[in-house]
Image (cartoon, rainbow, N blue to C red; front, side, top):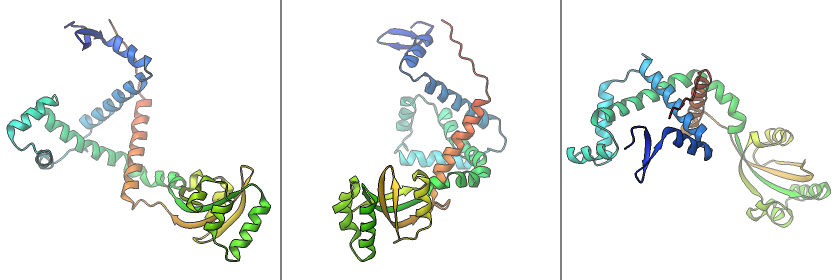
Length: 253
């Protein structure tokens, strides 16, 4: 194998320069470099910070749990698994420990900013379940509103008169992010309660009647939402670190 080869395909050696050129041609070089920089930041933080120490017993228990879950309790089977994954035990153990440290780093980097970030994103996280009727002109919308107020069935009117695709679902839009609504619509919806009829409102030269079905306010007590925001905030934190770096790509033949 050529000592300068970075990769060999069917006995054909490829240099690092050639591999990078292929990535650039495929439009994936930036992503490749981004992954390298991200991992560099993580390893620098994990290896230099003193507030990320993990109890060795926790790591050992995680190793045991992993082997049980993956049915790798037999030493020979475990050794074969390590070899297939290009690891020895020390590297595997270090990987488990590093994962714990990264989670601890994630908490340290995001917890002080999480509440502020949640407030910043809240308008897009709050959702409202809506039904709607969309018609071409205001007179029709006004007439439909009067009919609904006098007891007509909203769902039937949506099926009969709405020009929106969701008419086949009785006008039900499902959950809608408050942040994606036009300002005027959001203000009107925010002032309403479940069951209220809102409109008619003009939207893109058409007229809409909305019925508020359910309000779904976002909260950090929702663990899946909380984790999503932590991950977003952590990615932002890493990006800020990368932006402060001086990075030069140098490839020699």
